[in-house]
Picture 1 (tube, one colour):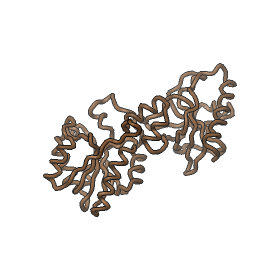
Picture 2 (cartoon, rainbow, N blue to C red):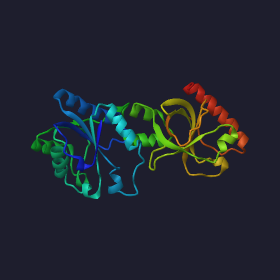
Picture 3 (cartoon, rainbow, N blue to C red):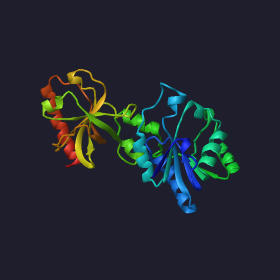
Picture 4 (cartoon, rainbow, N blue to C red):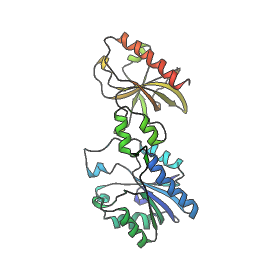
Length: 308
């Protein structure tokens, strides 16, 4: 997949089928819209293109009130590529861009920049200055610029609307079942291994402490069973999301004990996949009490996840 950075990388060669959205998490609703775009592109011999943005629009529109992100831009690009998109435009979202009238966005980006012949978006899609652009307006503007517009209905599972917001809310509560349904895969957090206090090793359960990207959505505080990937190999992992209350309060972070792993992680990048919540994070009276509980957490992880 070709990744274009900003409007300066436009125009593209040849006609396209386009979809536009922030696509945080690339959940199953996003997958439906992107999949429809790819299907139309293949049927009509167009290039399937997705347009996303270099930051969450609320960073510009409502500074200080920005949701935590379900995926990094790199991870988002991987997920979009897997759906068959051939070109990803990462458009800058600046105050100037936020101020464009809807007609300007259509003319500059969709018509001239991407040479759209078909656009598929969610049925509640809005765009342009103060979100004045609607699906109906996009349909009219598309007709004026020579492309068709298709609205894809919101996806519901068990009567619940699939959305990035609902996934974030579930994760904050430690609920992994809804994210699994809504995303179509288990929730993943990526981070670089950094040096910790070394307490885990001293307790007999060495952990990898992760430095996660700022603003990334973590599951609620607690202990989880899951897996961690190191250099493409997966290992069962007992995962803690918390502040280590037994040893005093620390900043919220993720650490994982990889079952059976004996190598040196150094500053490796780990992909941590959450399978099941085991318990709350609590303060133990003594380190020995914590050690006994970790042994139970590890045993439960082995039962749920299996071996390396």
